[in-house]
Length: 166
Image (cartoon, rainbow, N blue to C red; front, side, top):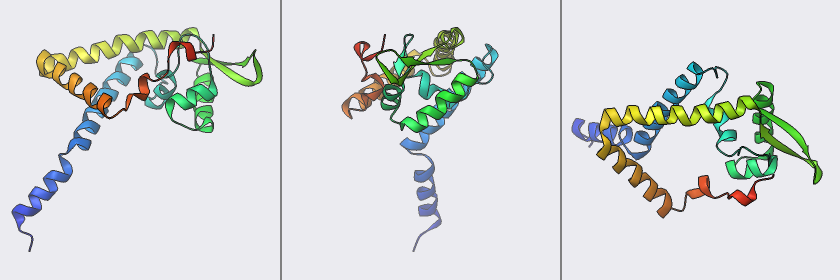
């Protein structure tokens, strides 16, 4: 027979667990970054657009490479790219070495977004630094980095400079 105390323990373990904590922190981080980017003149940017920009370089890259880096289908990437092109952040060009392929490159507005993203992520990190202190934030970053490395989840850094299309 389940007691009221057992029920509260079960509810607590379901609501306060690693997944929930990571999700809550991730949502807060994303919300803060989005607000600051909107304030900096990027009101049409949405979190899903960072699937593109997290895997795009300042040069040009093929759609197939972007999709592979982002772990999404080419169709899903194509849909995101179409929207990003419509709002002026990227340009799709024909690849000179393979006329069937498309190269994606950021526009000046896209480069501005990349620069502004670096600035606002630093500002958000500064906010967290004020809230929890240097030691706690460094511990968190080191712990998460260590977990990602040990679990071989380093796909965010798996593409190299030489895989970019010039």
